[in-house]
Image (cartoon, rainbow over all chains, first blue to last red; front, side, top):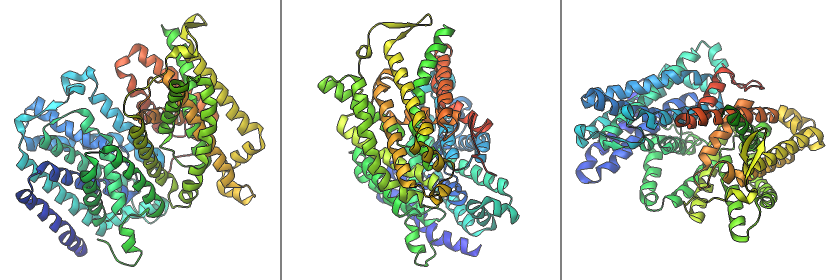
Length: 306
Length: 291
């Protein structure tokens, strides 16, 4: 456990401090916020994919559920932002519980079913028939609670909690049990690991993280459309960032976000097709030549990547 | 109205069988998920569009050209990617990510080359006026597309069940390692199946302007979901199941569009989840679930 604390102090704290101070020196706060959001999403996905091996292609479903949980709480209940954040978390958790039966599926079936589930949630929320409740495809405006500085701070707190969770998972009994399940569920069950309970807890934690990220996203940008909140790129980016750096580590997804999302911001915004092309090539090469990510370059040589 | 919905559903079902067939063949033989399937369909649609727009080629003739070219394009892709992929630890999962990358490459190149505008081929090219079938009037283009699809399904069936290579292919489907141990050239059989799968996707693309509406570089994702729904309903890896899945999907889609049109696009997703949860092996299928 002491090692978990050390990993958190050496990896997470400098990053959090840098992100907390960055707005003083750099004026594009939205860009910094996006970095924080993708750091949260990549680590949330790491909790389920890195530790249990389930690849949630529809991870964005939780993110969107969180964003709309926040928006509906503000629009219909006049909730304060912090209460609405709690609603965002609850919305994602409820969706997570509803989708828990999907964990019975293995491999590709889980990934495809999860993707279909996220699409289904999107189609329900953006349906013109529900315009009175969700404003359908026309998007929501939450200018009454707009508070960029405060929501930036809340996003940082969520990131800190997520990084602490990953550091804990890497070093606690529970995280080791999850990794045993990932390697071989039958042997893990034989050794006395509660397979179903372990998976379900990891799944719900991961859903909660994405829901909170969605809530704080809704709060920070305050005007958005269903296709923004349910954009499949959120899933994809989170998966690729995690995979690129190395799943089941704390440092890997951080490196993935900083390098690849940085690259995206340098070339992706002006010429998105060329970025998409580079991205596709990168993914193919990654899977063929470095399936365990950048971190495996160090672990192969005997170093322990935090 | 009910009779019309059911009949057009069956016609669309034949076409959706074709949309799922290539994906299912590749999954059945290699146990990899070709997430770029929808984008190959898109390329087929653009091939048919340009052949028609530039030299006025009839889609039925373009479909033969597309079949040949796409099969030939599939082979190098197979040898570049698949053997390495199958050697990996969790090839099924990695294949999703890898072919997602391939999908991004195809979509990016198509967007750069063709732009984002919608392209379509007028339906009268395949014959004008409605065709009366069992007392219902259906556009000729639908019936022709369905007939071509049925022909393709029949040929795949003959290939798998009435030819020597087909027998070998089915052996690989049942157990790859044992097929290898009994002296079957697994890579040649797989490469052939991969080429056929890609060619079938291209063929589905040629008729997509008539069945799915105009073609855009971004259409791949929706096609993928429909194809997945079809093959999951049937059961992964079984071509007869694909036919059943296609027909169920087509009829359900037409009924939804007739009676609850606002919610029709929810259908593939809900069918997919429902079948996976209630009967994860598909209606005709084998074991896919663990723990």
